[in-house]
Length: 256
Length: 67
Image (cartoon, rainbow over all chains, first blue to last red):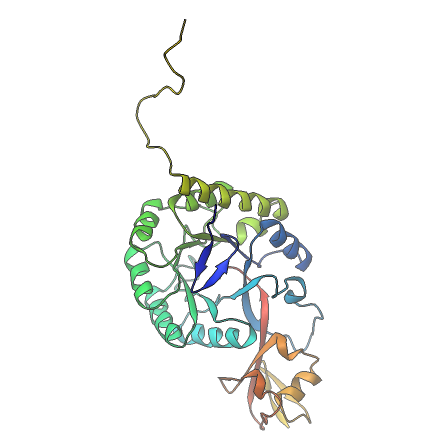
């Protein structure tokens, strides 16, 4: 079945996008990403340590020719910082894609959606392909789309919480209204959560902690790969209606 | 010449961004450089002259997902 995710003319081979944080080392990161089948990997932008120069670099393990590198503005609490990191990321990288985060609160890591909207507008104007990380709020999703977001990334639950899709009904409404792709970003804890997101009709899922923090990240990466494929296929296939009573699936005719 | 690199005092005889990166053993293709809050184009690394008291930031990609 031909079912390719295309955003702004860019073809994505997998509907599972993965982060590169929280792994034991670069080798484990590379193996998990390989097992996940993802072709988008998110990275953060940080200062090079000029005093203690490590010879190894993340990009020695994750080949930018093989994977699409999606820089994020993780850790940014203001519009100014998010813009600064985005512009640096564009210069350091190879594309205009940016996973935009403007964080509003340290404890919940919920987005500051007012700042997010402002930053989305400015970056879209500057030609960035903006993927804003937002709340599961249908109104804000629409506003971000109108502001020029290439896709919108509502959270399923707080970052790293593993609580799954806490408000599938909101995600459903976001999906019904959206003209741009919708990707669940954050909250997935295990394979079934990823499947639920995809069954709802999300275009892709971004997962980091659920894979990197699993006892065996490489096996979990593979589980997520199958979970996303299963959820997507189930969505395309169209599930049966839920009913209160039974409905036999074997014929009555021919019974003894 | 003295200026700041990633928040640290730094002394060098190098005069360009390209020279500074070479001295620091940094591959230019892997980083982005900001001078006094202005993001520099990689094509300008060779020609851009650094000045006494500049504030230089050199960033690269590290592992990260959300936040």
